[in-house]
Length: 346
Length: 289
Image (cartoon, rainbow over all chains, first blue to last red):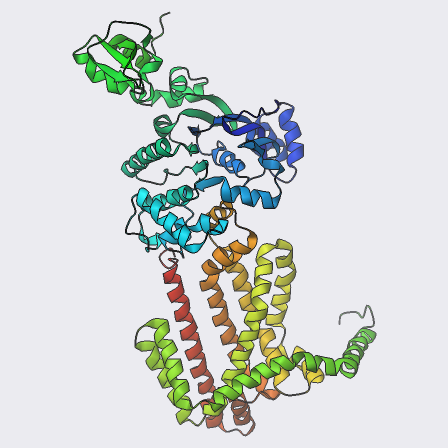
């Protein structure tokens, strides 16, 4: 096990985190570490392996997505970050502090001040109004009534629920309830937000709107967001980096296009097959870099393949420019098609 | 015949002598300990009897209206109270009501903390559940006699017997209500850094309140069902009228006093139930069922 480096740009670092559910977890852990598979351990000891030696580095200010099917351990993983679940082995360092060494009191302070969470089933308090729900985290932290209600009202407006302050959660639709959940987490003004399948219970259109809103909020607030999903398209859309989890182990971790262009395992390949690659792949990752003559039309370096496709109707080459408008490379239709079709010259 | 394996007579004698010893040496202390209970009962009874009948009617009808916001329940409550007044049962009804209210209040003070304790620990639940079964099934005379021996006949043993019989449902329903709070809500609360105290008062009890109120309802009903037995050891009230009716073979006296108990039961049952429903609606649990 590597010692955790205290790199300043890391928000969350996990090293060798393993979780085994059951009464004799250490015994089952020894079996797992001796090289037995998750299925073998379960058959022999009747203990379920939730996480198997997970190591992740999550840099500050990015949306990090953990993707996996149900039962892959992704919800277990996210609950380790704020220690709603205790690991059987491993290290978890958040903002430079070892979460596992905290006393109960320190842990509560940590949850009150450094980390907020959004839940799949919303987890709103049904007996409180929307504004009191949004102010809940601040109330627990001990913020005075006037101040916390003012703060809550601000975030209710940002997530687009103005006018619903005094409503009860049950009077809202699912999408609106999750906006309350999001506002409650944002009102905490923590650097890190954990989102556990936050949008999975919502209708596709509402989900897409919430994803756009989350991306915008992240850009303007610069928070670190650890996002859990079972939806690969969602992961590609919002993730700066993606880790794919299967049977409690990380199968691949990287930028969205790394995973789409170079899936590490057959399991990930299966996901990639059904995915809209034109949306997943950024043009900058397939362009020809360097000095070229200036093209007639250009796209930003954040553009995806689907954005450049229409331009090829008129142009042979399309330029790629950086924030300053400087051309940093160019692509042809052929290169795009090659990336989308995953053509490899033999 | 089952063979006599051991001689049980020494055991029986030990129990009897033990009780006698307690009565002789600790009777005074026990009575002193139960004195606040007696004061509570006396205060409630004096207040109910001193209050003019029309004021009590007005208060109960208003409570019924607040619980339902419709005219139906207030009319039922008014009719039940008029029946008690017309049948010359008013004062007995007030005595019975005082016993019931005192028993219910004491049961709430004792049972809710026990329910909270049970909901937090499996071992405590395992230990207390058989005790509650015992309290509910043991014939009340079995513990009435020792209490009468210790406290002497009167209102205290009647009150204690009523509390013993009426508390278990409240303990059980408090435990159940606290444990069946949506785990997703509890987890969210934990994730925001609440301590167990904040979770209990801010999340669990508010969300379990409809269930706890159902327990209070059960407790009032069971307290009322004890009034005849309680009157045998000096509680007075409607139960005493029933008892006299039986003793003198005056069917009418027994019948009307019995119906008076039913009238009280209807009032308290409907009112507490309506409050429970109102509460459920307010926290949005009604639709989920």
